[in-house]
Length: 449
Image (tube, rainbow, N blue to C red; front, side):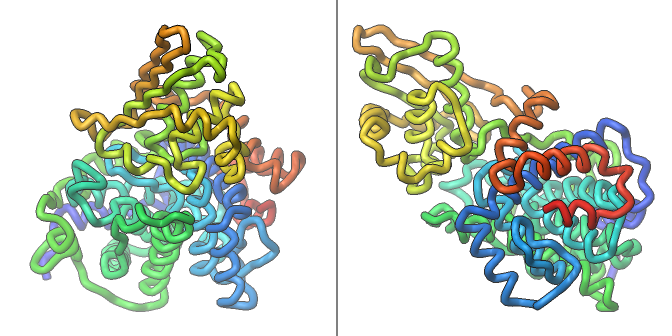
């Protein structure tokens, strides 16, 4: 069949990626996202989704070259990718790409690391593969047409799709697939792409971590590995009839598959979270911390709390069973502690403590139906004497509009790494990822994890 210009450009980009000369700023930003995702995998390895993903991987194959992070298990790349992908999204601290409404890192980085360990690729190879994954995965979702309202008018999971095609692209780069092979790998990825927003009803975050990270990571590795082993496939899964884009969305625009490819690097348009909480809750947490810093309100003197969030996202974090995605709890905990910590955000017992419950009972969440597609929040504290304290956050710290400093990223990473790896090992991980383009073997990173 005829291959469209858009599909061909994506495939040519992937075929050339193993030798791409990347801008220094892109390499630096990519290493930051690899560090951020590695820290998420390590901390997530101790949470239910990470533990269960690792337990599954341990049953699949007795040995292999790829590390299941936070465990002594080494297994096949396809199984390590699944376990590490689930761990990467277990604690809600992984990155997000706002334009595609997706979390690319929790699928792309575990897939790339697993294949890089399998092939004994260099650190530079790993970086190039991750860049390609971030470039391709979100663009597929943009070509679908992002659902304007996540919870009301959409049922397919943009998160699963972006990570799926991103993981396949990263694996294809590491396997060194040519232009034809890259097209076939993307076609296999299209056949296994899945994910519906029923994950909103997942109270334990295990299936959600599978949808966002584990499933796309393992499917992406498998898609590229099938082609690398000799399987051929459909030449163009994105155009002609039938095709993936039209099958999933009535808003498809295949031109966006290659728009700006090789010039606009999507990793530079991806946010790194400062707070390890569900994305819609971030701005509310920051607003409260700003109020603590500026006005130091005494929790006992707070008569009422109002949180205003975008209408499409409010219900995602409304009184959820898990503390790290329950915005009322996160606001209350931050007010009581006068700071944010990973431990507080993941403390289920604390969510039921009397002082926390008292503040949560005085909290009202207001969905602003006039606002969607952004991560903003307004928090208003009404004090016992009738005065009000209000803070609006437009750009959350860690977003592209308000990026964290390198030291803030280091501090966040250590908060996640040290409880599992200890201070010395965590320092080694930080050092190695910072100089990843110079590292002879990506297996060195796996060994540290």
